[in-house]
Length: 500
Image 1 (cartoon, rainbow, N blue to C red):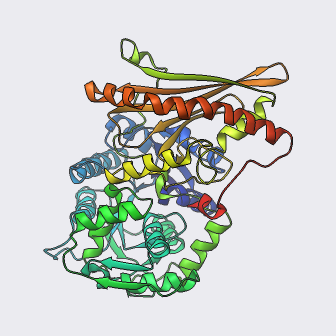
Image 2: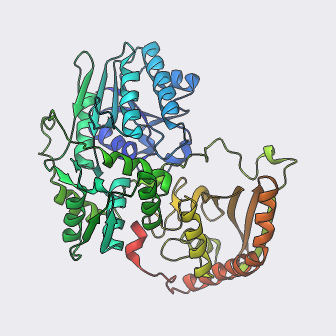
């Protein structure tokens, strides 16, 4: 049994690793910038959570105290332009804090690729640099290097899924014929747990991958077969740059262009295991690519997606950002649209209706305008409307909800969303619910904090649309709650999208 620190527990890998570590008998402490994002995890009561960031020496010192093994599972993929400098800074702070606290080992998940490849993508080179920075200290480091990770909700899987399902004919760059060695999320987690259990001395670098070496073209055809789709026609051309390719991926898939670009750039290089790492003792043989895809689709269909790529907050929207109710806004210029609707349904029914908004149910009014806004956001590199939601009915703090992020949930009382679309300012959509006799009153607020003149022009230009959208939305939610109270189902469209 070890005392383990997990960074990135609110992300895709970390959120799935924590229960595996607990099952192995380890004590777990999580470092999170927004601890409330972990409140709805089924394992929350079994772990200690400390608020902090890997670039903050003070919070790291507290988090590292008494720790045997520290896992570095954070990186700035899809983040700022200087993401590599940010990652190096975080790695250096983490390394120094671990040394100061007497941590026995650091475990890091990086990316495959040859160090001597002069054409190594910036993203992969940064992954390798982080490993080197961590290993420059006195604490032994186990660096696991993996390529494409296949699992329900992973960014790589969602990119593959949407490209194949949306496009029966594809014009692709030449990298579609580069080789890579995908690995199932189950096998990545097994290797990470084994690295925590490793009590050996010195630095270790392990290359991990599944049993299949495939081109991306072959991966797309295998996915089509497993999903029951016709064979896809793929034509590669030499003129599509990574920037253009990522823009195209951003339009076709739920991934924003900023996240698609490092994924695309990583496929420019062949990422194949050169020194295979055997499976950990007692762990089954690695899953084939086909089986990994089958399991990922089964989990999605059964609503058993434990974590998703969209669980991680986008760069530029940090937990330190002020809320619309914070004193920091005093003297600022908040622009609001306030609507009130009464429902004969009880607060619990109104709350259930509000928490079921978005995704496949849509936004109750003017679906075309919502879709157009999503496409406009995609065109400028935003997330668009295709992220959907994790679960068709339940919301948790930190969930992605179309182009919003769930910022606050208080049962039967409050839901607040923060906008993650590209905007000249900050925006929220908030509903508060209060009892009113045998029914309830729903207060709806669209809140906007404009950035400069452009922000104000943006808000005032949309006022005619607000009159169409927000005034009707509150009434529609109140009426849907009444139907729910009478036992009528809230309308939904395609349930298949609810898990994407």
